[in-house]
Length: 402
Image (cartoon, rainbow, N blue to C red):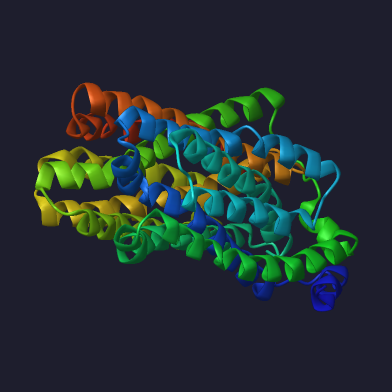
């Protein structure tokens, strides 16, 4: 527990973020999402081993994303009422078990089962760790959410590098080596869980999760939530098209090898990590509505240009696209938490779960398009999705309502 934070709150002076906890939860987010991203990066290997179609690859994503998306809001809502600090190490254990099973998977159904287990880890980890980030924020919620989320983005970016450097050359069994990182994550999360449990009963911890009136009518809140869901659809369906099929697009359209395509996927995910870390603090400073609008609608010129440029320009554009479009997510999560105060876990679970659910449905649908026509057509269609960002103009300005 951080006594200075409690003292600062009781004396009426602003509390400071607990950066040790934020760093720890971000590090474990890195480990968790690194292990999960190995599944996505392994798609070319799995396609070769099991002779999979694009639709079957899409359904691997469906299995992973839906086991996470369906459970996350339920877990979040339950833990809003009954917090479970020590559920975090167990969540990491589910992810580790899924990777170990994936390393020895001998059939397509076993691959799907592995994806389900990995998704179950996310369903518990994300809502609870997002609550920890808010508790440790010291009132700087956007900054805390960015620090938490950038760990996940960095982990997702490292996955393709591991695949290119180790898993592609060594084969599917080498996935078990990646799972060893989970032991470090479990050790860190045990310490975080102790801090979490202590702060649940402290004055500052209770204050960080307390409900605060927004000044909005119920109808306004419902409309704003609907608009956020539309923005999430736009953002994550486009990101799914990049993350799931970028390697195949580069290999088919430009004739590059598997390892080169994996390194390019890392460029996209590195851009997304940079966008995530800057999005939250900028939202704290200029307002979350502005960063959401600028992020999703502002990326449209680059997505529209992507299908028509050469290889090197493509690599540059995917970094820019990842940076801009990912800057919105910390602001969206914190905006939702402020919109429905006192429901930190439920809102975090809804948005993280919705992200996984959209990605799962999108992966399957886009896989059908790629099988029936071409993977290039996927990027021509998805290029227009960021234009849905125009609905962000209709969001209420939360700074004015307070």
